[in-house]
Image 1 (cartoon, rainbow over the protein chains, first blue to last red):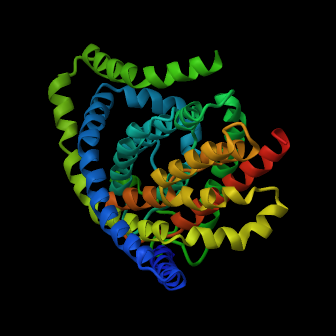
Image 2 (spheres, one colour):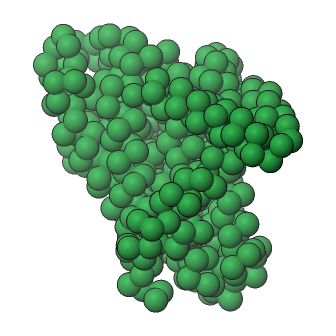
Image 3 (cartoon, chains in turn purple, cyan):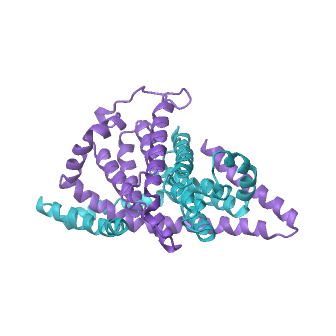
Amino acid sequence: MINIVWLGLIVIGISVAIINSILNGDLEPLREVTSSAFNMSKTSIELAIGLIGLMMLWLGLMKLAEESGLINIIARLLRPIMVRLFPDVPADHPAMGAMIMNISANMLGLANAATPLGLKAMLELQKLNKNEETATNAMVTFLALNSSSVTIIPSTIIGIRVATGSADPARVIGTILFATTCSTIVAITLAKLLSKMKRYRLSDAISEPNQQKA
Amino acid sequence: MFQNIIEGISAAAIPLIMLFIPLYAYYKKIKVYEVFVDGAKEGFNVAVRIMPFLVAILVSVGIFRASGALTYITVLLAPITNLIGMPPETIPMAFMMPLSGSGAIGVMSDLLNTYGPDSFIGLVTSSMMGSTETTFYILAVYLGSVGIKKGRHALPASLAGNVAGILAAVLISNIVFR
């Protein structure tokens, strides 16, 4: 699916730019597409470079939290939920702790912390993966959770509302909470349901318990 | 008042975490400096590994964004979105959110500036913005960081969540703000 979406964005984008150029009789739309493509490739690397320092900061803190047993304490508290969400991950595996930290950062709206912690969780989940080029069920559920936003403190949105002169910037917190709950429920339900479909089922093991590697 | 509390939590969360974790580790007799550095080592490789994935995704999104294709999509979809009480002005927002975080912030600021943050359009846009994340970016970066090429059902499940979030935001806004 990602292949189709990726190609689709390029094909639609360039086709529209060509049509607009012909309709308007000037080459500006085509030039804009070119400069956007070049700028974005530069931006991607700047983003990745910017992430190096953040990754190091959070991975260092995570290591401290891990070795001091702090992660275990938090993981134990959330165990009943996490075990149900990620049945393939052993309850005391470091992946659980990393996922919990990522989800907490997301809830607080701490985007700069959420990505490094999420990547740490992926590294841990990959250690449980038997087929290293294919995503596991736990990874898909984790991604569904991350992409559906579980923010309870939408600081960016409130910030933009303040900046544009809103009389009541926090008025949307209730509606955001409702919408994000709906999106999270749908994403996780589908992550669970689709994993059983023939098309997406893991080819080798059926339930992949993975205990031996932990 | 409520808003001050939220701003306070946002501002204090990171400093408190950065204070508490090393303090607790020190209390547990961990060599805090050495262990921190040891953990940080992994950071470089992760950032380098995600680069090709980021370039691929962000360039295709950039081409789509710059082309003006969203204008056509808005015109095509307006009759349908009108039926569910979704203002056509917010259609570009719905498409931008899973594709690009900075793009979505741009569209949202633009809509709030044009129609006012407390107008119905402004309230729907704000509610939509909080309901989803930048799915394509997350999938590319997270899967790319560990070298996974087959995402299986990660994209359909996440996109379905995005659509549900947008529809829920429109529905609840129509009930609460109309």
